[in-house]
Length: 138
Length: 138
Image (tube, rainbow over all chains, first blue to last red; front, top):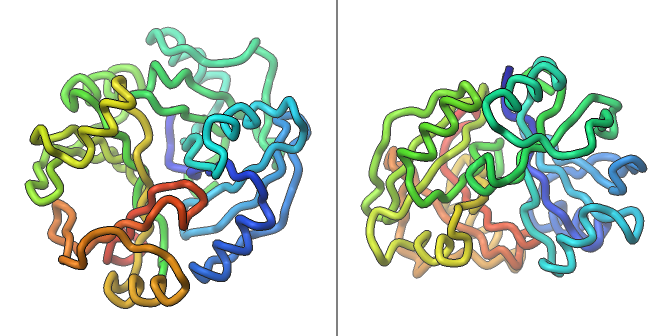
């Protein structure tokens, strides 16, 4: 079950330059840089009340987000993420409704170790949507 | 001053079809359809705790979002929106930091009559970002 909104995610070519820009021009605070080896991204969050902006750069050449940067060299909005109570149960329910959940069925995790999955953009109005297992306050 | 996250916005070719898909496949509730004549969009919101998903279709052929649909016929993520305490003061402070605020300087409004402005994607990591004048719970 979808329980809330988690974050919007921006892929950037250089997370340090991105963080500097966001902090100096917008007065926002970019959190600790972390690496999600499973997903092939280096990332950081801007906390904004109940939601967050995620900044991601590829952490290896074959990162899934490297192709996005080839198409969008200066970066751009990559996906947004909804909170769910249970990724497996939600993915199964969505599949029953004809929604394609991406991946080979192997569990995927965010940098906090929480279960995640991605929905095919063709099944969500052209938007790449992540689902993440946690409460609405994520 | 940026005070919170407001919404992520998806442009769709047909808001009724989009709403049906989101409601039947995802169990989400799409609110009342409204038209923002100033912005040239017909829109509706999905409320998700503190944040919202906005669905927009062009309400006239010269709608600013019509071009986006030409490039992305099935729809897609168009922008996200941050809450600010005061659009004019924030836009002025951003301009002092070298951030381009779009438009001809005429006040713009969302469908609730709240003041809005848009930031040039080149000055926010490649993302089109709206700022909207209201508190963080918007």
